[in-house]
Image (tube, rainbow, N blue to C red; front, side, top):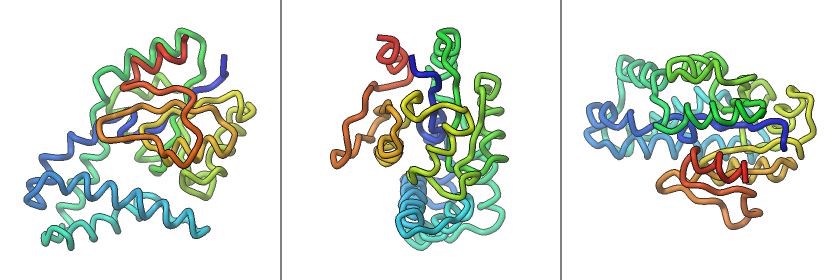
Length: 220
């Protein structure tokens, strides 16, 4: 048994589609939410690939400006604040809480590992009712990098005092799985709708359509 399971948070555990009505109100199109988050991820990847670092909340704010340009509706300060508040109040996907409980009872150490700043990450998990289930909550920024930099995953395993091979990174993003694999972790891909592993990197050790099925895959 691997000693620790590391979980990405946004989209893997929490349901970002809950933001769609708000983005439709602000931008006139609920597709703006997907556009924004994908732009934020692309910017984070670019910053990481060029050897830099920016806190993810700043990356997300910049991406929101670009989304505003794309949809012709620039969000004002009040609208930006409403989006930031809504990000802290995302619901968990329906199966997540029970799946985490099952993994905890099986003896795994559970770790949240997100690009989100620590304050937001704790607020998100607390609001979703998931915070007490985790042995540790880690922000990539604490490592001075963003996922998928291998430094982030190494930082997480160091904090848990385990070897990378003793951990499984579970995420709904192919780039997250790729970064963890490069750092020496085992990986589990949660195939949320529209997301796929990156074929340029080793296939994940586990693959399942949701976290409940992931529990079964890991247990097997």
